[in-house]
Structures are given as C-alpha cells and as structure tokens.
Length: 186
Figure 1 (cartoon, rainbow, N blue to C red):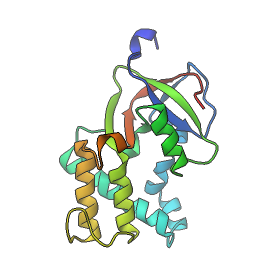
Figure 2 (figure 1 turned 135 degrees about the vertical axis):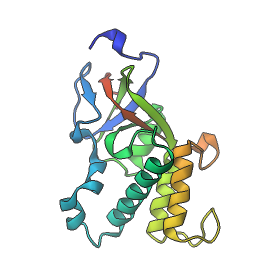
Figure 3 (figure 1 turned 90 degrees about the vertical axis):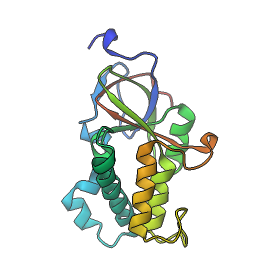
C-alpha cells in the first residue's frame, strides 16, 4: 500500500482491545477487530440465551441489518464493518459508555481510497436496545410495538439523521475496506 492509497485528509478514531502497530494496515474483514460479530455467531447466541442485554443487542443488530438491506443497500453492513468515531472525543465517550471492552486503546485510522464510509448517530442504535430491553414506556414515534419502534429507529440511523441536537450526537463511523493505523492516541 502506498501513501497515495490513503485518504490523508480523513482521520477517524478506532478503539481496539489489541495493541496495533503504527503504520500497519487492517481490513474490516479482520474479525479480531469486530466484537459485534458475536451477535451473528450461533455458539455465542446459544451461550447468551436469557441474557437481556445480549438479547436486546442481538435483536437490534438483526433489525438494523434487515432495514439496511431493504432500504439502504448502498450503506456498509454493521456486521462487515470496522467501527470508528469522527473525533477523539467521541471515541473516548464511546469507550466510557461501556460499549468497548475495558482497557481499549484508541488509534487514529486513515481509510484507503476504496473504503466505503458511513457516519451515523449511535444514539438511534442505543435507543433501539433500550426499546428491546423494555426500558421505555413510550416511543418517540408514538405508541408502537418494540419491533416497529426499532425498525423506525433503524431507518433514522441509516438515513444519517441525528437523534438529538447535532452537538449531542455520538458518532459511529462504519468503515468497509482497509485503514492505516496511526500513533496510539490513548
């Protein structure tokens, strides 16, 4: 890979449980960087039956993937992508929220020219999880079933709309392709 293959003006921040070597290139297909694949693995699904947190995230992942396939097929799949944030502050908020494993390291990443990039508001996904866990009495969409509410949240997510005021948005960047690793940020 040459420097010309990297979009140097585009920097995102990736949280990893692994130490990554500065200058190395990782691909979205590297499953060691994609913990959310557990929601599509039959052994993990069986082992977590009855775990409300896992089941809520499992349902959210599958609803979000179904909506992407039906209405936004040009967007990268969550299950195939490497996750990042648009800035270091969002990456730190993401790690602090408990979405990442304790002890994660944050690295700047630079996508290659052919990497498909999509930026969403993670608040829509988190909202769908809360719906499936039964933590919300009313939907922002009205009196809907949990599955329909999650589908509506998924449509907003894939449309790239903010859940809250843009300054309160928690960015989630899906990167489908390869990224070059920068110097450890935290």
